[in-house]
Image 1 (cartoon, helix red, strand yellow):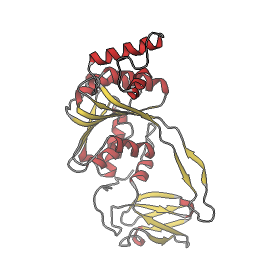
Image 2: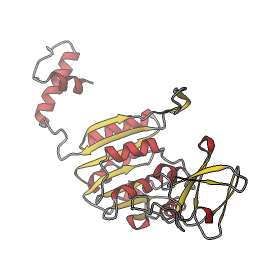
Image 3: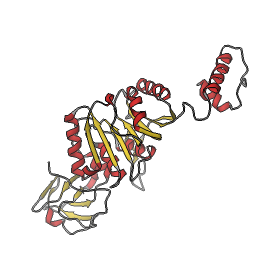
Image 4: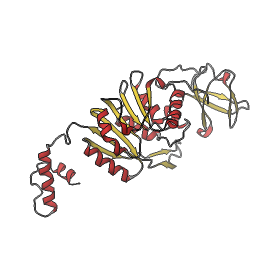
Length: 310
């Protein structure tokens, strides 16, 4: 496969040039992404497009195949680039990736660890978000998987922002005081001590898990390892028909693809209560459950009482 050297984070020319990635979109949003090269012919389901007919034209131009069918030449969105990467593993969906980037507060200049390189979809998104001054450290236990991730990151032109490492993360991470850490491994709950050592105090933790029992185990491990503000959610995505006269939901939607778990690395087990106060609160709950106590024994904050009682 040709090298797809481009950088979606950088400013690009508004005119199509040699080496650019171009998304060729036809009627019904049938599309493909190609890298423009000298003398190239682009084969579509409706005929052939010559690269020479694209050069110098602004993105968004309409071009015709050799037999007169019309297509639009667009600059690809990052979501489209991720969808088209070669893969050996199931990649994260763009809907989940976007939510992860926001809730992990990924921004230019940050240092971020990813455990589980996979095919590189999340790696690409992280590298795009940290910018030229940031760094992504991507760990993978299986070198063949990481080789594909490396190739995909390089095709997008973001390889300078990523440091790949082949290692079982049970051995720990090399980095310290990173801003965020994302675990894309099935037994994420086994690696919280290693995660804790790598994250800065107050740093952002995230993971994606497919089953509810894995989530329960991770929540327990997060609490044990002094993580707080734990949240669990899933992202549902439904497209609508963009037709003013026939506006309605699409017949298909992207439903459950995994549980997203977030937390913050804390210095203390609980940021608001000492161990002594937590013990008193738990005793009050036990007494109430046993029919011995009143609701307001040892407590002034009913909302927190409900949280601890579960």
